[in-house]
Every structure is written in C-alpha cells, then in structure tokens.
Length: 111
Image (cartoon, rainbow, N blue to C red; front, side):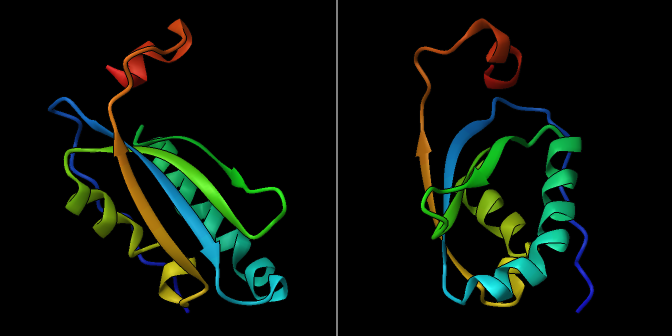
C-alpha cells in the first residue's frame, strides 16, 4: 500500500506540544514489515520541523513521538497518514502538554 504524503501547513503560530504514544496491535513481524514506510513518514515530519523525537518503547510494545502542531485535531489528522495507522498496526494516544522548563538546545523548537 503506498504511503500517503504528510500535508502540513507552514509554521506560522505558536505550536502546541504533544506526546504521541503508539501501542502495537499486531505482531512485531508486521511492525517490522511497515517500519521503512513508517520512518519515511517520520522523516517528513522532521523535515517540516513538526517532530522532535521518536523511538520504540522498551520493551518494544509501541513507540513514543514528541510532536508539535496548531491543534490536537491537526496533529491527530497528520498521523492518519502514518503507515502504522493506515494498516491498523498501532493505536495512538495524543497528550498535549505545556513545557514550562526545557534545555536551551530545544528552545528554538519549543518556542
């Protein structure tokens, strides 16, 4: 199944920050077969400066992504293009939070 393109508007407003928690719904063999497509999806998010961090949980039962967007609806809609979502391989939990303290090296991304 072809990967849908991530359509993201340019950064023009103060962004909200989200923790996106994935929980795998299928065996790891299926996750591994979708991993290259999933990583291409993530790369588009990094290129647009919408993603800061991503990686698998330990133990490998899902993953965690730190993302930003103008609204929870926008961020949730963006993730419908993730091959894990498209193939019903993972459940997603979106948690918005307001960073009050952060390292100087991420200040540009957070603000």
